[in-house]
Image: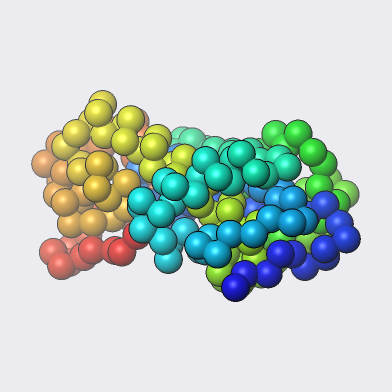
Length: 201
């Protein structure tokens, strides 16, 4: 059972990102403020859920949350500032858009750049410990997957329909045969000598 929050007396936003390890596409982050009485037994780290489970949870989270928002950072920006800074910037952009100002931020992972004057706590594997971070992980993942499906329609040669931009064998074979697109992160290692390479996502 996930915890409701670190400080239950504060308006707390959970933040998480999706797409950090991809070769293509923007990195997405979500910020979610859940009501104090929110309960959902199936909510968990998005990586522990099936695509169908995530798709069922997304409208529930968006409907029940006191506030939620999604921020993105483009592949070109990722190449300019690196993926770590881009992931943190995506979180900041998500927080920027919240309709309710949080009093505390719960951040998945161990790195964060302070946002304005709002205190924050970083939590390794926080998406498997706190409901608001888990909710943010589901929104970041589902919104990014939806975006990658649109890109797949534009560039069908990379199997983004299935790999969502992650460095699978079929994705790298597509790059080798057809080259890169405007959505590829050119500072990443796009081709690998290991033909068995396949990263789970």
